[in-house]
Length: 157
Length: 124
Image (cartoon, rainbow over all chains, first blue to last red; front, side):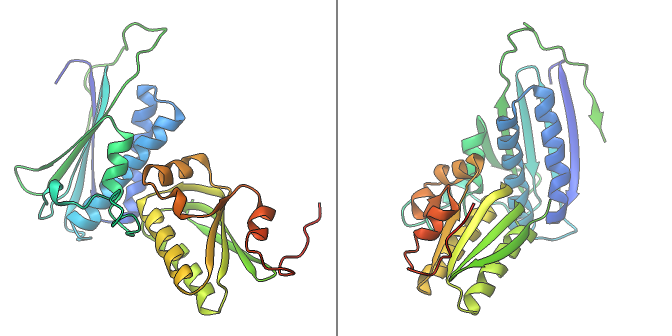
């Protein structure tokens, strides 16, 4: 962890009507990073897709299983980790939504959107179970401020 | 805001005004139910107006594809009107834009159905 870092952690139950709580936080973090409206929208969508996957495919709508999010804002990027408590899966086994055979499939585009709208996306099985998606977006240099001033670490329980 | 759908009929064509978010759960379900309701009563020429749609996620995209396919399989057409740029981008990323007929102008969308006398002339 670098010194110039802000961390926000959120845990929500596996209920679709709680997704907005997390995406509001994503919007706020994006604004703190100075991302423009378009980038805010893209980050919002990537976060929404990752949580929807965690609830639907990971936790299978089990309200006793949570989705855990960790936002980390540094002077160079915004990182967002989303973890479920499901059985996990092999990312390589997912069908390619751009394959002509899958083009008209009603599902399977969430990860494509994450990869399209974020700079880095990593899917791994969490050491303690479930899947974790970690995605990040690089901050753009601010022309008027050679270094971005960030307060010391703030953690929200 | 959660999705609201307002329907209006012009000749043999139904225009659904989509207002709000078309996302997993409530929004996608509403869109599915409304298009299915139209198909059940024989309304197969449908335009979805996105002018006031504020957000679409992959679930909403999936529902669009499903309703498009279902409508087509029943001999009808489902066309898209006034796609906001962000939603158009989502269709582009997934290479789905060519699947749909899209229009910027409502009259052009209505005329594209090619049903002579079906569309009342628009004034003003």
